[in-house]
Length: 362
Image (cartoon, rainbow, N blue to C red; front, side):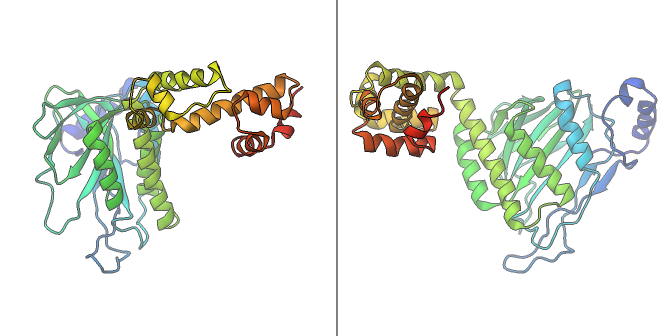
């Protein structure tokens, strides 16, 4: 980690006099390292003590790492501002409900290496971590696979203990990164299953919901501004859902999702009056019913029947606004069993009746 001694201290003084260096985000604190009260530790079954805490070094002067790409500067500023508060956690801030996050900056040539099989001590709980790059790059390798370069816009998950290692490579210009530890057993199990399918390394945009949820967890670590354990667990589940949505989008790009949805909508609109079953759609896609249902849901997050119904309701809504047909005629034209079925379905999806909706037309 960073240490302001000897040559590093001289380099810090030189950096402060350099105009380019002064334009980078900096912390207000003059100290290079701080200890942040984080997670209360106690034996299983015992009540956590408010004063007991895990301590870790965190950056309090960013000077040694490389400059971030412009699109990642706002994320670094969020972390810089959050790190000004180093508040102790409340008594309930204990494993498995608590989480722990911070950010670090390493200069080129710094010694940094973590082995996932050797950082686990007897009595420590298993945990999952996510580490992401803001500037420069580091290397990550898992289960004997070749190392991958983790650049800005990339991150990786690791379960401790497990076979993985990550480090600052000799040819790296330095590495500025954030990370979050999670101890919640259910989240660990659920994220681990997704990692087994998608792999531990993920890519994301600076403005993604996933990285926003990660930055919030780190800010909460510093500020301890989560009012109670329920809000703390909510923050963790927001991170989980954001990750699962990201993994889904990476596995099934939006153009494929749109293509599948559009194909089903076209099948409905070719003749909205005909019954359109899942078996019929499966045949059009050249699949069995079960394979098609799984294929459709994994790519769209919806069921085929739900999309068929949505398409019928949207067509009915169009006719309500742009035709003088009666409600019964529209119900028949859009494939509803009768006017009552049309009314119930339309109200469920549009949150208003067909008659009220029609009054909205200019």
